Image (cartoon, rainbow, N blue to C red; front, side, top):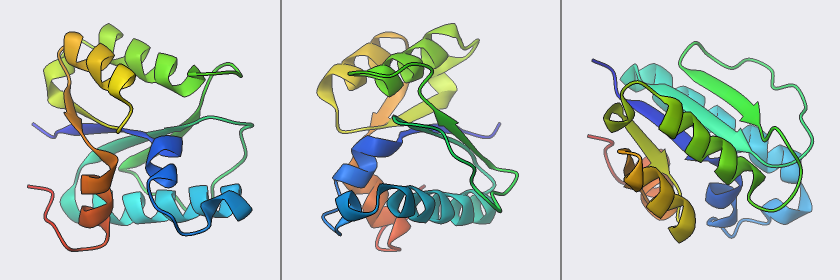
Length: 131
């Protein structure tokens, strides 16, 4: 069975001090591109959820899905991520990537695993395997 990953996109972007705040859409595109490459190489399913106004992403592969929070405001993407995990038939097959303690607590209570944003970034940078 393939493992499934849900990435708290804004949380992960905010964990990398690379000037993402000067070009949020560009940072989102870079993160999606990195996740897409990893998903393809490892045959994993990845959903990345962002806060903010939706816009189109070009050239995403079959293993990645991009979503935007269904509402505006504080913790909007977190609420969507927690709902997705809670409503899933097999939440134990999901790993949520976030460093947000409150979100981590919510999804763990629903049965998902949690990985920190820093660990994900190391993996995307090639300095750590996903397995």
